[in-house]
Image 1 (cartoon, rainbow, N blue to C red):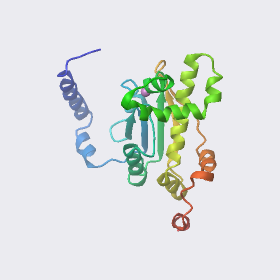
Image 2: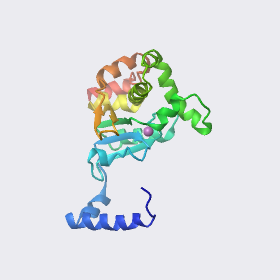
Image 3: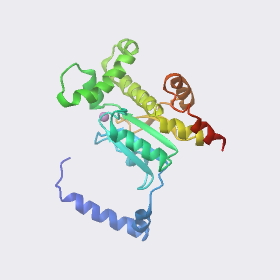
Image 4: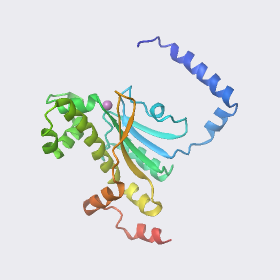
Length: 222
Ligand code: CO
C-alpha cells in the first residue's frame, strides 16, 4: 500500500491534465464559488472517503470528518461547519455517515484508558449507555459492534437536529433534511438507516425546541 510521497504530485499533475482535457474551463469555474447541496459528516477513517463513495465531483459536497463521525455541541469545529453549511451554503441535505469496522467505535466498546481520546470517545460510550439494553442483548460481539455503529449514526443525527440553526432553517424552508447512513466497507455499499427526520424533530422538540421565538414564527409567515 505504501507509496513514495512524490507520487502524490505526479498523480495531481495527471488529474489536472485529465480535468482540463475534459473541460478547459474546469478550474476557472471551480474557482468562482461553491454551491453544494450536501453536507457530509463522516469518519476520518482513510477507507471511508466522502466524495469517492458518493461518486461526487468537486463542488458538490461540503465535508466534515472526525473520529467516529461525532457531532457534539462543545466541538466548535463540527458546529461551525454545520452552521456555515446551513446558513450560508443553504445545503438541502445533511448526511451523517458512519462505517462498519470503525476503530473509534471499537475503541469506545473496549474498557480502557485511551488518554487524550477519552473525552472524544465518551460521546460514543454515552451512545452505548443510552442503548445498553438493546446492545447487551446482542450476544455476537461483531453484531453488537455493527449495531453500535448504526446507533452512533442515529444519535449523531439527533445531535444535528438539536441545533437551533437546523430547526430554524427547516421551519422556514423545509430543508435541510438529515439522513443517517452506514458505509459497509465489506461490500462498498451505502446503507440508508432511513431516519424519520420529521418524527425525530417532533420527538426531540419536547426538550430541545429552539425555535419557539417569535422571530422564527414571524419569518415563517412572511
Ligand atoms: Co471510523
